Image 1 (cartoon, rainbow, N blue to C red):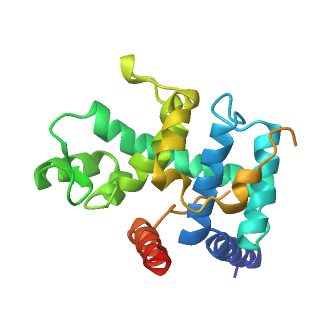
Image 2 (tube, rainbow, N blue to C red):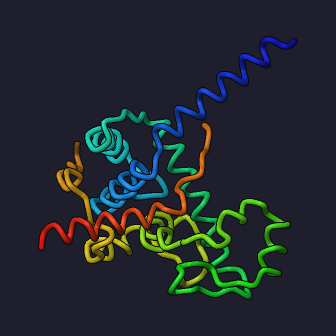
Image 3 (cartoon, rainbow, N blue to C red):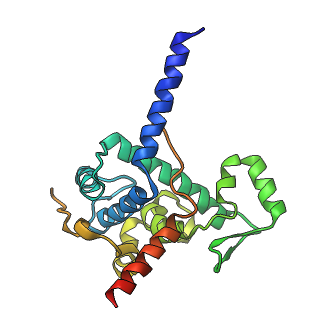
Length: 210
């Protein structure tokens, strides 16, 4: 029996459980909102946040969730999000034979097309039949600068006004409005119910106010 191997397996499983306990659907949504605020206030001048951006994310994630997220955990989660965005973006902008279903919020393509694409990249299976509205609402303002394709390329600053105008983007900001500008393992980002849960929460809060 290889005791070292067994110990490594135990450590890996423990690490993955810890990651899952940190990044739930709720904490991921809060993280997205805080990231969008950091873009809005100018703390993401390049493909990554600057010093103030990371400090704010760590601080306000703890305030909003009660959990502690260090720099590495935040950066790893950001990298996972960016990887999934690129996967989605490539399909929507560079591949032929697909469309967008505005009702189901899914990629509109034939089964034959999906089967062929998944043979080449099994990661694409996570997008099949998935409600992808979150990518369009939240991910696009964060990651459009990561993909350069002709005239469609934009930077975070191009989306600053969109963030202020879109109710979906500013909903539930809470304490994140008070951000002071001066002041390794990857798991799937969100479940199929993430955006649905978010919308239900919005509807409940609206009914309470009436």
